[in-house]
Length: 214
Image 1 (cartoon, rainbow, N blue to C red):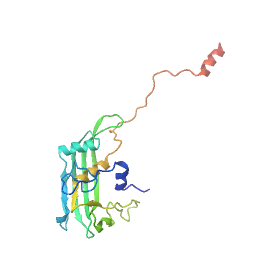
Image 2: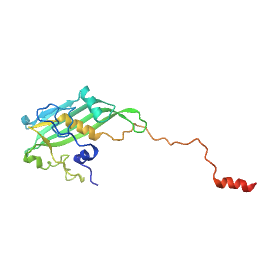
Image 3: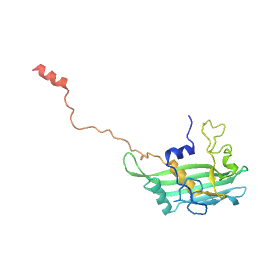
Image 4: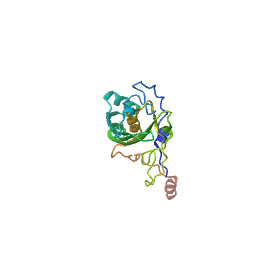
């Protein structure tokens, strides 16, 4: 069975994103997903050979905006921890973990409930217009399964960056949105069978039986 790629989920689960704003605008989304309400730009041009570890966290205003965007009651916490490295072919890899504490509405009971959202991140980036933008993902990344994984998953192309900048905030917001259950259910919630208290009407055959006995 072929699993859906991240690009497929973007196309089918979410509406098209607005175009990213011009480079230099602090609210622009460098990963092309267009989530300006949470932006943390990272400059890869000074990235060392050993890579860099980066941790980001959304503030209260950003969490409120993201909760509205994702149709959530609220987001109590959103943290992204990433390790960023540069490959010899020019691709920049961002690997890490996104964790969020959110409040959702149960589709069964309509009660609000708290949930923890976890998402693993493994995304490659390439400079817009560069030859590396068309380079396949290195072996073992999320853009291509390892040979022994047994999965038939299509490889996603690299995300684009401008002037070496990656918006880690937009990336974290995207993975949060992609990881949300579209039909959240509170633990223990279930549909109760509705039994009508109105007595069932007697069947015509039962009425006929009573008449013939008279």
